[in-house]
Image (cartoon, rainbow, N blue to C red):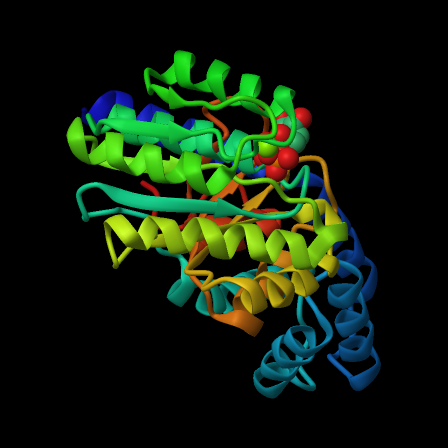
Amino acid sequence: MSESGGTEKRGWFGRLRQGLSRSSTKLAEGITGIFTKRKLDQEMLDELEELLIQADLGAGTSAELVAEFGRTRFGKEVTPEEVRGALAGEIAEILEPVAKPLTPTETPAVVLVVGVNGSGKTTTIGKLARLWREEGKRVLLAAGDTFRAAAVEQLQIWGERVGAPVVVKGAGADPAGLAYEALERARAEGFDILLIDTAGRLHTKANLMEELKKVIRVLRKLDESAPHHCLLVLDATTGQNALAQVETFKSMVDVTGLVVTKLDGTAKGGVLVALADRFKLPVHAIGVGESADDLRPFSAEGFARSLMGFSAAADQS
Ligand SMILES: Nc1nc2c(ncn2[C@@H]2O[C@H](COP(=O)(O)OP(=O)(O)O)[C@@H](O)[C@H]2O)c(=O)[nH]1
Ligand SMILES: [Mg+2]
């Protein structure tokens, strides 16, 4: 396992670095512009704070990061490299407590996946199913977004690809009934994990909430501890709006963890730091592309260093 595992790991860091390159380029160029050969003063710190806010790290978090940095280095000459290194270290500290891979232990573990339309729920389910299949787990998928036929097909394609059966009902079927049948089957056939897809039409918030609550209620008829995990999928390209989405979904269901998608091709990757700092919810995985390989458990140091434009995690040797 070690050799291919090592190659795999480097491949992932490369993809992460590449995926975050728009965010990291913007930050690195900004930092180079601010930290010219001068002693660190308040003006530079203010500019740095503004840059971090622009990169979606959030106002509160940006202020904390800059204050901490200024405390130890005020009046000293600092290079852009040192600034990036110091920020990467501070960001890794913020991220460390939330970087928790999802390793379900219940049998079957019921994982409900929620989030607004287009955030990446169905894709994330496919990718998670693939990771767990690779670990030898038996995974069942439930096509709970019964509103759109295309959503059901999309999940079926993923199911075939990763070797996970998909529980499907006709278009417009009751998602709660489908979830109930899926859990019955998962128990009867000895599946390890049941992943339930949901619709995410947020313009009808009251309906969505009712639908999700009903899904949870019927699951609890079979297993009162279900769902064991409720993952909220967030699209990083929405920037600060992702913070509002967490508030909305927390008011509807008991969100147990986050997955942040589409970190590739956006300059808003810093939003993950703002999310971690504000909500302290576990970030289970991040998505940096559309293919099955583009989702991995989230590593605090790998992310922090990639965001600050360093090529690999320091502990990687
Ligand atoms: N670039 C990129 N695209 C993604 C990622 N995750 C999902 N997508 C794409 O985003 C679109 C919406 O994803 P989907 O899973 O259907 O969202 P859902 O409506 O929440 O189920 C699809 O075209 C996906 O391929 C990601 O990490 N990176
Ligand atoms: Mg979907």
